Figure (cartoon, rainbow, N blue to C red):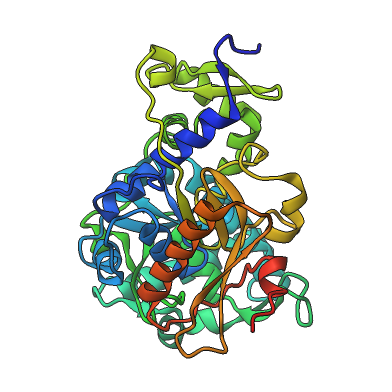
Length: 407
């Protein structure tokens, strides 16, 4: 059924600017993370750069403090087998729903890989091997010392066994690897271990692992599955609503049945979206109750690869021109760095590697007018100063980023 309340693309873009802290920044890292539901963390630099864009005056030290000292923001493998940085209070719901789904997938794939590699035989033997390797890791980390994957493998010999992943040697994303990476990934999805301190530079993923109990003061206490999904959907609707059922199915990596149950549990309200289609809002959303919605002044933003704003929806037409998609997203729908003007993606940004300062350069795909150019250039200068010569290397660079030719 199409909702009675009509929601224009302009209204959605205005909400995006305000709720995502892009038109009016948040005061601290925790508030911004909570406002976004979760931050993408597949590329380590995304967490820091996403918060730079949303928190007034934030520093690398501020983000690191939240991640590693206060532990108010915690990295967890969850939706779509993607690594996210969650506000700590959302972990129980995540462990009981999206992370649980991923953990089941991870364990099943690990079992297949262990059997295929001949590390164990028979269903019982494979399960016993996984349980034994997992117990050895947990016993090792029980001493309270955080260790990298390499360090754990050195002390748990079973993790040195090699498996073939993604087509094996010679495949673009595959090869033959020590099985330890997948054992730790499964334990992480289950919430039994967690990525603790980063053993490398902030822009690189080199986690040290420890037990969840040691890091958070308690082991995983997951919510019920339905309750967990309902809480994730509630947070998503607060951040990204109105959004469609297809958006939620994609973002959660879940089924239509799961999404529809969560929407029903929340008594979500359907609304009509511009151009057709049905979106959903929470029943206490100001757009539903008749409350005031802010109308921000035009704003500019430079967002990192896989930023949560860019990756929050599957159906992106209200903020992204269709002809720009092949230039700014890869074939799997992963976004590279993006440049925004007043709620729309208008291009991307790169760094000039020929200059020692690695200044940020804009690659804008249309004539935006002087006000937009000045605002975007100001953001580019601000980001250049903040990075202070640090060069960000992106695994998920977009075609336009890869094809950039800078003087």
